[in-house]
Length: 401
Ligand code: FAD
Image (cartoon, rainbow, N blue to C red; front, side, top):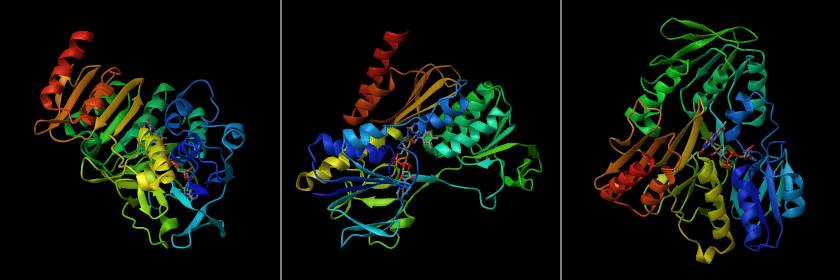
């Protein structure tokens, strides 16, 4: 392709332009981003950026010099793509056509909001740098915080508030948090971290509504309780950003539907939180919202884009981490069936739990066992058996006893 256009200037977009140049693309390379900011990294936003005692600047992925002078990328910030014509090979950006020979869609995901809370002061989601700055400012004033949703982001926000010594309550509709992400037993074990660190975790109760006129004053629960609040952070998940593609001919199904090679249509590729691709080994369509996937997938898509005739399948073993109360949670693979503890126990400060399907290792969850996770991930990637996983566990235990 001569002209490469990347829509979405975050992790996936930046990795794609980097990879394209590294692999020798010399033609025009354009990066289009809806936000005004230079590309930045999201994981620190719910961790150091809002919870740290030292005020940190935006966690930029690249500065202007690296991006524009170094890589020779034409960067358009504060500019949103509004439509795509696959046949004509044109993206509309602020109603101006931008022609491409190859396009990467990397528009990520946006936070789901609680209906009816728009415009109420003190109520935030956490997806962008601007969201994080508003939450940090509220925590600076000692806000009493209620987090709606005990997912990873909500849990990290609660942890950040506790780190600053502030009272925080999490309201979770499910009886156990994170069941879909890590399974029932592990969800319970992780929920216990909140309780141990002084977060008031209320599960199995819904939000009836928010109290307050211009600013939020409290959260009314379905059991009749009203929790006083100066800051409410809504952490109820994210949705892929595909509204701008609805008038195109691309297949959309909770994300941009791609084949094994991450192609969505001739000349069109997708990567990151927005992409749902057919996993060549697992035989299912997956859309991940993980940092490691966004970067790896974008590099893979860029490589395929440069040489479409030799495009290869994207065989990725999912991996993510999350930090709560200075504890490191890591997960690799998929949470199938009942996990088995192979190090520590569910109540201990450090444990490793493995998931199996038949005689295969399918997933691994660790708490504060940083050396373990990539070993299990590599085993899953090789299609390792359950017996091999048990042997690996025995070796790891002998080393770290
Ligand atoms: P995004 O980062 O969502 O970026 C998409 C970009 O596209 C955005 O800047 C958006 O403004 C832009 N855009 C959207 N529509 C348009 C348009 N029409 N035109 C132009 N631009 C557009 N993952 C982990 O594994 N571990 C963690 O600890 C972790 N922590 C996280 C903490 C927070 C607070 C958040 C929000 C996410 C976290 N993640 C974590 C997930 C990780 O950050 C994401 O998987 C990653 O950011 C996805 O990158 P992306 O480039 O695909 O999409």
